[in-house]
Image 1 (cartoon, rainbow, N blue to C red):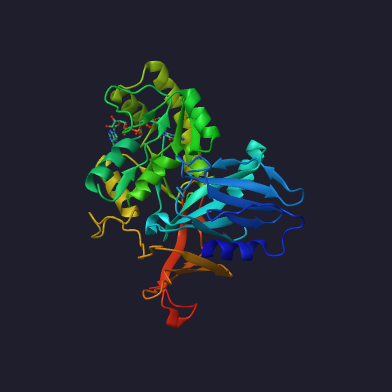
Image 2 (cartoon, rainbow, N blue to C red):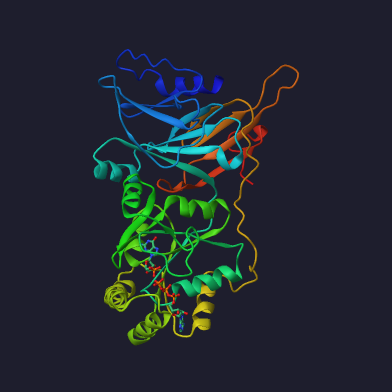
Length: 400
Ligand SMILES: Nc1ncnc2c1ncn2[C@@H]1O[C@H](COP(=O)(O)OP(=O)(O)OP(=O)(O)O)[C@@H](O)[C@H]1O
Ligand SMILES: Nc1nc2c(ncn2[C@@H]2O[C@H](COP(=O)(O)O)[C@@H](O)[C@H]2O)c(=O)[nH]1
């Protein structure tokens, strides 16, 4: 396959200090990053078409084991690979649709360096590329009983096509009317702890004696539906989201008074007296941190429900005439049909795509600008600027 040879020439040229028997086939790419070569190929198991990663240490010629985090792309018809920003490999899938053509294998991003320290092993992570920035998720925090859920329900009822709820996992027991998969993914502690170790969670925390967490999948499901994601999480979770790569708007909801908070929590009638006491104790600490830590972009007091809801809509820019307009990701018509080849200049990747078959030769050119990537593993890589270019304009053909 032409595209793969081209990548190999670019990445392996003159870099091998020892004789290596890579035995590359048409479905493999090898990308050199520092002292290592990352081999990406279709899984050995024919029934499983996901990408498989092998890492070769050039100094000793040894294949190393790595923990592979994130959702792997399905690779069946081949791919190209090229290093971008010196910390991640851009993988372009052959014969793929615009929303599934660009993936990243992170090899030396801040997330990977952090995970290497935690897991004390070689780590790589997959992240799907998303064209454009997408709307920022909204993190809503505040003490138990303050009215977060009530406000979120109102927002989602009024703007059903605009917002989607990130369904958290929890080890707490379901309440009377709560449904698995809708209000929470109710789960066993051991299963959830394993998934956290496997990097499936954006954040997790022990809250009021139970484990709660936002899976990468919970947020991706909402963004993939073209909606803006709302996370209802505690202050510890908000701090963790702030610290990792998910760019979001952070809103803290306060009660008008501690007495009113206690009254709402009791009136809801969902907790035992012991649990109410625990939640109120935790509320004092959360209120202190929420108001003073600088963690939150906005603080709203939920005294009168309707007034607070109006303020929430205002800060989300929903008071204008945007009602009912769903968010549409700005995907260009970037179908990578047939074979393609790639080459790179600075942070721009040029993709030549199409067939040169006699009589029906056609070529399409696409450009990916990787200079302003945002986010990344354990979530999506956003800010990808992929666009079709007119060859007559040369490499600097303008975007839109
Ligand atoms: N502004 C308000 N005035 C009076 N009652 C309110 C107000 N907002 C919400 N409530 C009521 O307070 C109770 C707690 O609200 P809600 O369940 O939304 O809180 P929450 O912050 O989501 O709690 P948790 O963190 O425990 O999930 C509910 O019975 C709700 O109807
Ligand atoms: N850190 C996280 N906190 C979460 C998550 N989902 C919910 N929560 C918070 O837990 C408390 C209690 O919720 P309840 O449903 O048991 O009343 C509340 O403050 C939620 O905001 C999560 O995924 N991560």
